[in-house]
Length: 295
Image (spheres, rainbow, N blue to C red):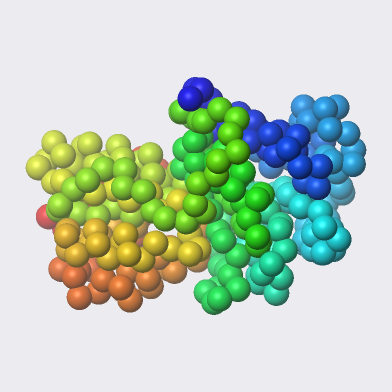
């Protein structure tokens, strides 16, 4: 296992897949010269050429139409989009093409409250049998492994990459042909008093909050959802059945937060002893204050 930044892990995984399969290509605004989403592909133009790293004007959702056509022709497009709202709209279009191998990459969140409101105000990819997989990796390891798995999947995937994570460091697997499942939550910390449900950059805040809460004799269980669609209902139900309390630590996608809350109420409502709450944390203290308010 190598120690890489979130950005480096994504770039490494993408480079491996481009080298492994010549059907894979990247398309998006400025992907060849500044790196596009997350500045990940800037060094790849010279390595793979313009056929594989395709710079475009600001075409927004027209990129999705181009990707659909390319996938119908046997290629595997990776579309770099400018923000989460566009990726969500793209996901709605991809619902009509559940068997096409298309990956949408998009940065999530911003450095100030205005950005969080902008992204959080986006719509959401509604449920249903043809909903694309929606992934929100919270670590370099998951960012690399889930991107590789998404590229090899038999249907469309949307991947949200939290801007706050690009420079964070962690372990990531070296080159491998093995890919993890694209769904299934991960328990970051075990606890019996409170469930904190988190995704993307909010997972780090939730883990830090659980450490502070432990000092107040509150054992918080932290769940990294990893995938926002499909949600791991079984993991949520099992944790809340044990703790009886739940907080959603949001990474700024209001539509996803509503969907998570809906699933929790559907699968674990009878187990909740206090109302479900949602917080978009600037820091771990925001989660701690909500948790302590309920006692």
